[in-house]
Structure formats: C-alpha cells, structure tokens
Image (tube, rainbow over all chains, first blue to last red; front, side):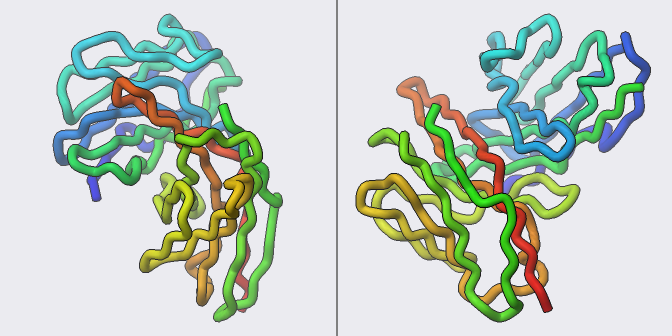
Length: 115
Length: 113
C-alpha cells in the first residue's frame, strides 16, 4: 500500500479566504486525484492532478476555484479559493501507485469548515 | 457515467455473513465494479474489484451476475470492526491511462453484537 499524508488535517476558515491542502505520498505514483466529500454525502471527484501539466477537472469544478499543482510524482496541492460556507467538506487525495493496477489508495482527508 | 444503487443501510449480526447488494444496470463492457469502505473519519479503503467473474480475497467475496447489472459483496464472518459505509463503484479506464471512480451513495452497514 501507499502511505499518504495530508496537511492540514482540519481547518476552520473565514469566508473569502483561500486554503491550500497538501498531499504527500511515500513513493512515486502514476496518478493523483482530488475528491470532495460534503457532509453526509458520498465522494465526488474534483480533478486528476497531472504531473507537469494542468489538472483535468470534472464537470462542475473549475481551475479558478480549485487550482491544483503537481510538481513531482509524490506531491500535489489543492487550493480552495474564495471560500464560502458551501465549501465546507472533507477533501481527500488519492493515488494510484506505480505497478498497482488494482486500487486507488486514499489519504486521511482534510476537514474544512468555512464560517 | 454508470451509476450504482445501494440500500441506504443494513444491519448484520456479528459472526454472520453480511451480503451487500448493488445495482449497476448501465455498466458498460469495459467498466469494473469496485468496492470500498469508509470507516468513520477515515479515507476510503479498497476491498475488492471484478469485471465479469466472481472474486475472492482475504477480506471479502464479490459475486457479479452474468448480465453484470448487479453484484453482491459478501463479508463472510462480520465483526464489529466491519461497521462502515460500503461503496459500490464503477471504474472507467480511459485509453490515455487515466481513470475515474464514480462513487454511489453507499450502504451504512452496522454489525450488531
């Protein structure tokens, strides 16, 4: 399995501000993904973080609101910009490890509350 | 995207087999069925996956109907630690190596002592 850490684990933010979430993996991975889990809901894919190029966003998510970086094969960031209370969610990164063709491994998540 | 339908909640007695159903009637021929579970406040954990054939690993068994429109996850001897939300997922693999997991609403499984 892959060991995935996310920082911060949780945060409380004021509306209108931005928060950058980091995802660090202990080994090189081929794919990195960002998900959102709103309170009491299932997971929704935000985007695929592509190494060295722009992320691929799912319908309903845009780069201006959720800019993503992936400078190398073990690290990615997701920024939640100009936050509103509706952005209060758990944000999770997941990875597909090199050589693994079975599953995505998920990080522990970042619990964000926007006041 | 192919969608999945699962019961909202289920109970199972400790030590018994837990059978979790899932409907995925719009699944396409190249789409896999995956099962994950999420224990409270943790990231989802992979359980098992399959395409056409039934699969078994150390955690569970996956039974897929011949028409692939539904499947059942079986936890053979449920323990209290199996209490979690179980997600049935359809995975689409794209030709460029990318993929997408589409999570359903999940089944909240409660194991009763």
